[in-house]
Length: 292
Image (cartoon, rainbow, N blue to C red; front, side, top):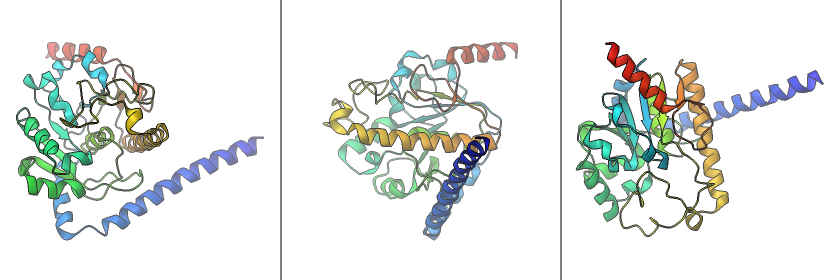
């Protein structure tokens, strides 16, 4: 019996190692396909390696729970936000440090896409942007979506793996939430707190999936339709599994660097990271600042 338990554990470990090695090898294969100019573009990211080592950061995405949590006290903190965050009223109080965009819809050159960036630029003035290299670079150059000096590119593709050097090819990301978290880890932020990571769409198909009403892009027919009309339940489950694999990979990478990640979202289904109560974190911040 003991032998069988040990053997099964060994098989699981070996499978995990094999999957990691395979993911890294695929990333390396794709890295060889990067052009000289693409490699030059990625080298700009070296500036961010451990830039905020040992400093607290908040990765904030747009789940419905964000509407019920007061994030105004985060002014002055290192913040990573995503997609439609510019719709939040807090932008009148403080500006995000970093702004992440990864959805292919943002870079297709449509009228909705161009309107999205125009609205965002009217609200976001100082943030540094991260967008995908392969679908974002040409679109940005062609449509002037974001300011060149404050826009950086990430080359990502393939299965989750331990590679997190942003000057090279990294794993593909199923969601902007894992895309943003990866950047916080690369910058050495510690601890990292997650907000708006509800990830409960499978159980709440008819409920608005953001803290704001409607879709990210204006005038899209899909804005007010439930997810069940847009995707099959099976496809959404597959997407969820792929996203969770992103998170497990990022958690392993963070652990190797001694970085702690805490989920401070109110509710939601994300169980990969240890839970903490956001309000208690804020109380701690106020106390610490008052002692200075």
